Length: 100
Image (tube, rainbow, N blue to C red; front, side):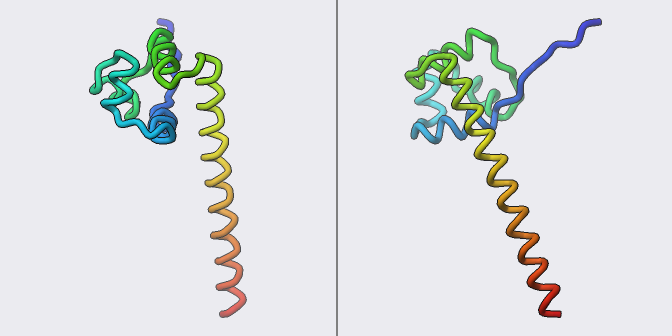
């Protein structure tokens, strides 16, 4: 049995939607998708089809390739914030250990 390959980008989609100051209803209307489907995508309950990705890109006023780039940038920023947070926690722990 062949396993389907899916992408999980729900959190990234939500951040992108918020970056564009859109509600789920706004995005649904612009993309001609159902609001519940947008919610399911954001919660990774549903996986997008290629057609859905093109509709989302059009809703954001960008090309599919630009959508891919936006999603990658969200992931990069997210990884940077996680890394920076870990560094801050390590510095705090070192400072706490010095005080003891």
